Length: 336
Image 1 (cartoon, rainbow, N blue to C red):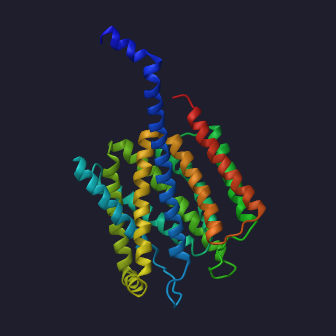
Image 2 (tube, rainbow, N blue to C red):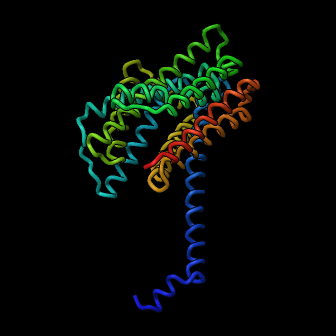
Image 3 (cartoon, rainbow, N blue to C red):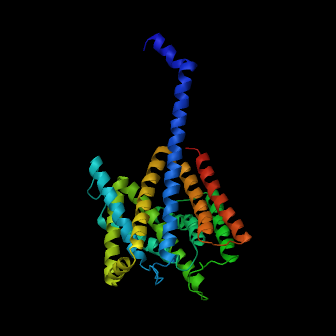
């Protein structure tokens, strides 16, 4: 470059507007990621609670077919992954043996089914806060599957999350107001949440092992995990005839179909926003966004669906989210 061009490149009067524009563009992209992730997953959470806990029609019938919701989500996600791979000319052939995809798929279907079913027994704030404790089973599975070791900070944060969830569970009603009131309602809901945490912890840990062991693309794993999950869901629904009952329910109450489609679309759009956020801005921003989303989901559910919380439960909630924000900060502060 000529001296004049070099001088122009280093002139603060010339570079400042460019720097300001780049900063504004960066902030705009971050804001779009926040709105995309938080907005889509809050819609997903609200519809999840609406479908599983609110009646449809004058007959006040409840939708009880959790696996049908799993099927809808997985078909849409697999279709999206196939379309992206076709557009980008990515690898469509399986990068790992199908049985390994099937292992992830089976645990994913069971985890998601437990998550939906739990809403029949416990309130959405209980379910959402319980999901925050997934780092504990992830640490356990990580030790056994990947021989991973954890720091003192990890154990302290996990202990704070566990304590916060315990306080929340002990000092308030866990059931939602439309569940059957019996002595074992809360126990069923908590058992389903434990099932969710165990299966979901295995899913994420084994997915991580697949990524590192086979160097596969994100959308390749998304295609096969969701595709096999859809097949398993169909087999499950056919085995007990629930698929026909679900279709009959939809025929009687068409409103549930729009809720299911919107649920699946919000889940799919959320996945895209999550992948983009992690790729462009890293795991720290993503962790902060997800923690904020979970907190907002609890607050919104309390307002929309009238879930009163005791002051002890608010203290437990504050402890959990403080620990999660601390985890995000400490991870960013670690030397790379």
